[in-house]
Length: 340
Image 1 (tube, rainbow, N blue to C red):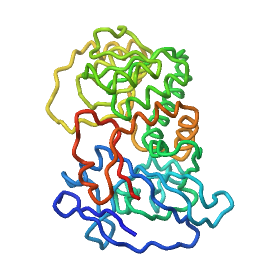
Image 2: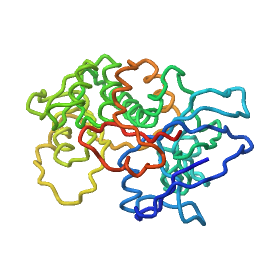
Image 3: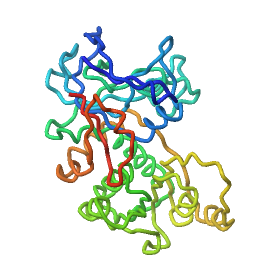
């Protein structure tokens, strides 16, 4: 079988190699179908983010997965089942969060992650995964099952929003999503599924993104001018500092789901903080997801329109040229690597 391999921070070292992957006791043996590509993968290859497996010079990339079970040690999974693999593994100590399988809240940073930190990812034609870290998908999802991991991230965000709203007696009726990339669009999907009035802001004025938002039943805006001054929830998916503060100004609950990578100070109106204090507002960050979020993501995808989900996958790159998937093209939403 074939697999991608990369060296963090050394793009020229990227390659496709032959690897033998056979059954592992207690784990599912999976035929890799697709691997989704996101900004983290680009940061690993180009900027040196991530960490190699101990004693290894390369790591198999990609943490967004879709595969089909070949062999299973448990009746919970059967050959032919469509599955996605969980990314993070709990730390070995474990910390208070990892001790209760809330590894996405790991407190000591000793977790590992498939395709990112010390563990090979899912960019291979075969991979194995413990049943505990596999999610069975609706077989009718087909290729859209590769959206499970990014959907789990926003499922976690919405779960946290619900918890904050409940304890602060906030009726959630409207949502602002900034950024119409995969995370933003999937956040909008879950907002629409909750029956909310959803507004999505992105700077592009035509093409796939406005159409995807409109088809979903949400409202698309090329800027914030057309969005109400107050909304119940904002999910900020761009990492642009000015948008983070604008969301905090407008929303009772703001989720920061994007990372800018920029460290230049940004002028801030102190009134934003006054509004947060006087309005009992909440701003929190989120990353990764736990198993309940993956299960919620699988349910959300199973209930979504198949044509709409398939419309998010805008480019397929063969495994032999997987580095092409790291180059962004103007109309990209979700790019996938075809492992077959």
